[in-house]
Amino acid sequence: MNAPAQPHVFTSYQKFVIAMLAFLQFSVILDFMIMSPLGAILMPALSITPRQFGLAVSAYAFAAGISGILAAGFADKFDRKKLLLFFYAGFTLGTLLCGIAPTYHLLMAARIVTGIFGGVIGSISMAIIADIFPLQVRGRVMGFVQAAFGAAQALGIPAGVLFSTHLGWHAPFLMIVGVCACVGVVVFLKLQPLTAHIKAQTTRNPFLHLFKTVKQGRYLQAFLATMFLATGGFMLMPFASAFSVNNLKIHFDKLLWVYLATGISAFLVGPLLGKLSDKIGKYRLFCLGSSATIATVLIFTRLGETPLAWVIVINMVLFAAINARMISSQALVSGVPDLPDRGAFMAVNNSVAQLSGGVAAAVAGLIVVQRPGQPLERYEVLGYVVTAATLVTIALMYPIHKMVMAKLAKGGTGMGPSAMPQEAAGQAAGAGKPAEAPAAH
Image (cartoon, rainbow, N blue to C red):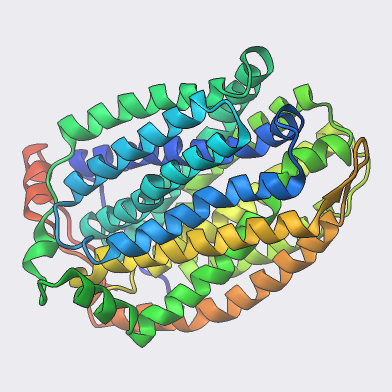
């Protein structure tokens, strides 16, 4: 089926929502990603093994996954703005605890607190996007929001590396707390209430609502695809810095240039990939991104000592491929749930991703081995596992693609002005433009 056209011109309020969610994602992604470059510092500083470091990374994911499932039944019962503020405040508190944790075990506890609250933020953001933007342009929206991933790389991680080098490993977490405080104030002051989904509810019992959501076959297909998608994404990243330092022989101080270059490229490429996904089709871009991911991962994980410039190029290609997969898959999966189930679906789907990622990070810690002063061993095995998971995900995403396209053809996933939450529609009109309806195919 041909991809839909892109006639939609974003209103002033919609542009604000995109920017706000991008900054919000920047802080959340930065909190998770900062663990990767800190790995080379944390392991010797806290005298921990790769297995323990893998558990520290996965603790966030496990906590996020469990809290997401527990919160899923309530996700469609409250104003999305209030939910977002509540969980973002808890996330900020958890990050602050990471910034003052003196030992490995207290750091683990702080990561759990951060995960409990941070794991729900992504699903709320996705629900907000699906509430306000039609499917035909969600690739563009996801592209801009996903650019936060690149911004976290280009700005946050180099700053984190510098802070940790000169001020200790606690400093990056305190830096993130400052960012979160600013973002939280903007959300509180500017984001309008989102309550249209509450009026569409068919059951008052949150646990019954959760059960009715997770038992639907088409939702289960999406959860399964998300599980394999997250498995591939979480395996390589926790040990990327240790692999670069110990195997590729990139000095830790030079990692800043790797993160800076790949982050800038991801920041610039994200919006372009979003537009491309709406133009050529989300599933088609997902397949292209997955193929590029497989090729790059198989090359990267088998490298030995490598010049810095070549490492930068490989990382730029790898992150562009990952962005293509994430943007297209998120936009496609956002078309699966109906409005009454949207919050619960997004919460469960995000929990599946977090739990699968936690398992993947923990398994990665069991697979790789590092002896004192020696290179990281068996990292290439992670590349084979990621390749297998990526191939499975390509197959699982195809029926989801067919399902969403069939639903879109019936007018079931796009959102015109009548379906837009009244508050957001009013704000858009107040900005001087009416909310444009998606074009017909």
